[in-house]
Amino acid sequence: MNIRHHLPSVSHWLLSTGFVMLAVGLQQPVHAEGVDLSKFKRIEPQFIAALGDPGATFGNGAQSWGFWNQDPGPRACKLDHYPQLKAAGVAPAKWKFDAEDWWLEEHGLIMEKPSFPLAPGKYLVTGDREVTTVLTIHPKDKTGNQRWELAKGATLNDVTHLGCRSARYTPAAAKDSCLPANVRATGFPVNAGAEMPAVNGCRKQDYTVLIVIGLPATR
Image (cartoon, rainbow, N blue to C red; front, side, top):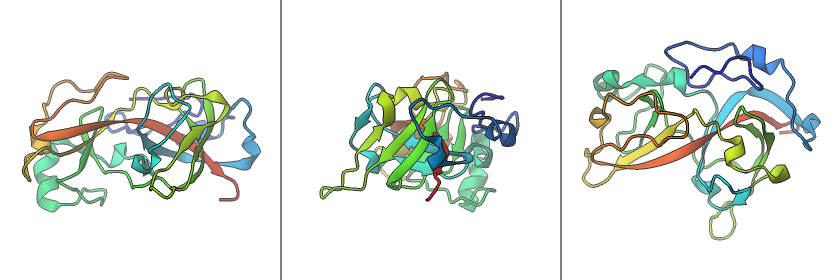
């Protein structure tokens, strides 16, 4: 995907077309209705892997959300490089491959998994469409649940980047039953909003992707 010169104009998981210059978008203003942007500092885009009802403005289960502190796309590996990745156990970008828990993005690239859980706090998020707002991740309660909520009535879909597709693959049965080698080579890139492909031997969990463009200024 090539997201060029939009607000916030991010370079999202690009390999085939290379990086879009982040500086262009980061120098442009962000308009977030009802949000005091002076309380946030702009950052180079980071990414949240989220689960939840697209139409919800708040919910539970944020302890199951992940976080990439940098764009995982340019750090990903092509499927036909899987034998080398398996042999080395480490990608050229120095992230560790986990054969029991691996991730795929919409171009059919094996990417590093996000970190879990997403830290409590406030995040300025967008789907690179009309809405930019504040996501609040609450601390875990006594049961381990983390609540999340979006400001000003925004829904999870409003701040989802529809073109960014990501899925987590884990073994459905025996060890070594779920392998990137089982991924069909056709059907990529996955259309915006569509599900990622099923893979033989794997359980699949699709995640939506939120773009983080700001963090609290005092953080």
